[in-house]
Image (cartoon, rainbow, N blue to C red):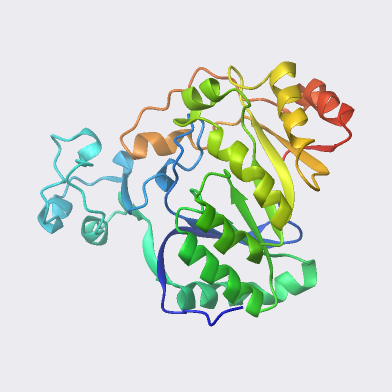
Length: 305
């Protein structure tokens, strides 16, 4: 490994401890900002923009006006939707700092590699005892690939197992800099029809189809399929994904992730509309037919993370 730049900074919007679903053992997940997709079911919409964003909790607001005084951009006003003009907001967080009730929350902050490692060290004993480690998530970690690469190398230097959750969308340079330092890649495959993929995620599936074989050659990879009614919740869609997965090197396991609406409330906090309100969440038992399809291709199929 090259010398690590511990002063390099990136934009992190959360660090979640004691996760059991995003790689082996007990893990800490570092959520990075920025994503080239805008999936309609996204449970972390605050991650999509690479810059920090403000969430507004109307129920907690005291209407004291301190946020308006603190904002130098004039982005806070009752005249704006959810009080925040997203076009004017720079994500500086001064309004959140001034809010006495916590009604304004800044999602995303600049952290150095050194600062993140310092946080991760708090759970180092847990990683060793459980066979766990660190997972990079987002957003899409390949967006901040230089930061992700340095962070992963720093984690490897600590002797920690590493994983990454990725859409597979990123430049060749990003893949070459990040994936070699990943022990387990959790790679999303959403749909094999590019038109459907674009309709529900904002982009076609061509980058995924191009990058998936390269990712699988470099690191151990597990395929994950978010199963969404009206999008890919069908035998035909799961069959097509399974057929493609069979062309990839070393794929033994496919996870089917039932659709849920856990992130719905975040859209309102961001002044956005959640367009999947009418879609009923899926239970694990709803995916048994899809499981049968996956297993017919010789894969181990796990329902859930």
